[in-house]
Length: 527
Ligand SMILES: *Cc1c(COP(=O)(O)O)cnc(C)c1O
Image 1 (cartoon, helix red, strand yellow):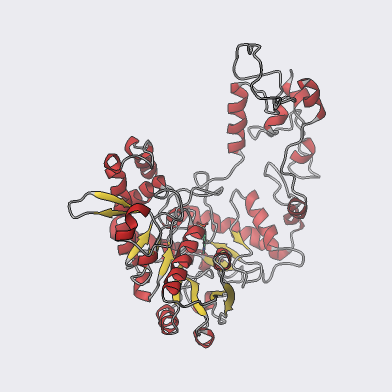
Image 2: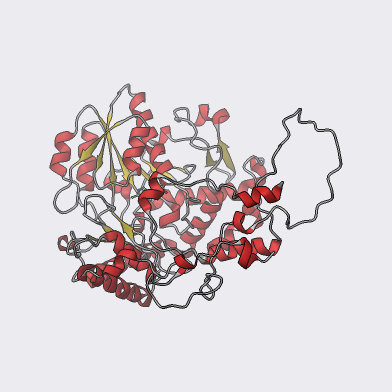
């Protein structure tokens, strides 16, 4: 079958570089090495296969009449076609290995290859969580050593290693707070969360059964301490505060906030997603924090994106440590590692609130994170924070003359620079600027978050970008921001150079097409 002319829908219209340009059309719809890849179901056909299987013998079915009556709708394609399909798709994607990823709050830093090499060692990669602990002493040792580093770096008392990501860690911390309150017979109902918080914070509190109330912010973009103090009382279980916060600012009143919350009988949860900005410089334990998740996939360079794999250990204060989840590793005086589970917990850890996940946590991520920590050392980690903050301030100061930077007057930012859409020409939005950045070859920055800034753009370069890379990004950002202010109509239809152009996001949200439906010719051919 001629794949080009028959099997695949050509999408010349969609592939024009500009809707009205005089660019020549190609026969295939492809643009040189950028190949327009249809769905695998569209290139497949039931009469082809990547393997030759012998004819199935005629045997009486053992399925009691439940046998499939219609052919299974899997694409029949050769091995070469399949390899090409996925390779082509991967080339249409953007990744940290392709270019700078300025997503604020996400800390998209380079994933060192050394981490990958360590995680692939057979002794770490080929083990199973149900193996006898005697046969995995080294792996338990890695979990334990990482735990010790996390406790030291944060100045906390204990750590729960099992949560699988930041949001899961938040739930772990809030469940510890609830267990501690229940243990003293104190049924408090409210968790206070600032308006600028990541959506996972109020979601976590609500999921754990709490009423969520706003903590007011002051005009500097920080927690309003006096307003918070007024709201504290016997119904407040705790506060969830992000520090550095999502406006890219350090909360200088953090210790005073913790003292006030503790005096009112509550607990302090810190969202530690921004730990990258302060690792090695500030210990959250010194600021009175009771629980804080650490996104290994942000601060400690383990890969993320596309939904996984995360890892979100939670460091705990002395007050909350007894309630932390099972299982965890313990090191005996002779250096032997044990796993504390339900069977042994009665002696060692009787007040645990239970289990967050089936096994020990994300082993592959633990190995990568510990490799990163050991390859930098304590001084190197301090420099990570300093360079991340320096890079973000370089971006802030290089763009504040062209873009509104709402908090730039209150001093330097931490590891991310925040801009608003103030001054854009009528009809042009943050979304248009973001799409324009795609044409410039960048993944867009975080947009419309935090909610407290209109048309927010949150840019986080991380410490792993060179000055040359940041300068080029600034140049592109300046250019697109200038077009947004000048009212360049072409921005409204950007991206023009991407495999797909502006998609109808309302339609995608309201009427998502999530299931591939079989075209008639496929069904006919299958008969
Ligand atoms: C990333 C992030 C989270 C959630 O972490 P996940 O690992 O994505 O679940 C929470 N808060 C802030 C501020 C974040 O940036």
